[in-house]
Image 1 (cartoon, rainbow, N blue to C red):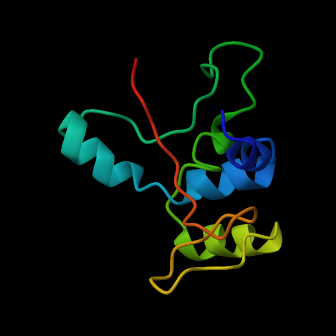
Image 2: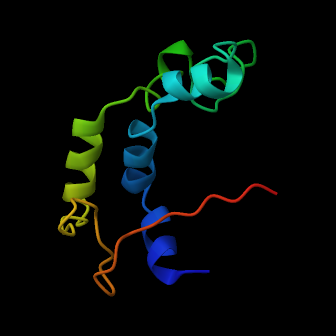
Image 3: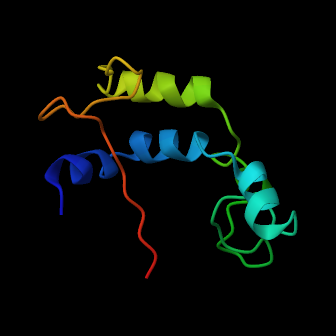
Amino acid sequence: HDPEIRKWFQQTEFRRALALGIDRAQLNEAFWLGLGVVSTSMPSSEIPESPGEEYRLRWATLDVKKANAMLDAIGLTKKDRDGYRVRTDNGERLRLQIRSI
C-alpha cells in the first residue's frame, strides 16, 4: 500500500479528475462491442436513493482539459520530460496499477 497513492485517492477532486480522463465510449466499443451504457456508478433511477438522471454523466464524460486543470488545482503540477505527472514524494512518474481479482 503506497502512502503517496493513498494520499491522492483520499481526495475527491483527484478521483473526479481520473474519472474525467477515461474515454468510456471507447472502452465500451473496444471491450463491450458498444453494448454497454456510458455512466457513473449510481443507484437505479427507480429507487428513492437515486440522485437523478442528471448525475449519470456528471463525472463520466471525457474532459481531459478539465481533468488536467483539476489535477493542477490540487497540487499535482509537476511533470516529467514526457509530460506525465510526477509524484510529490520522490519525483518519479505517478503510476496507478489496476489489478483484477
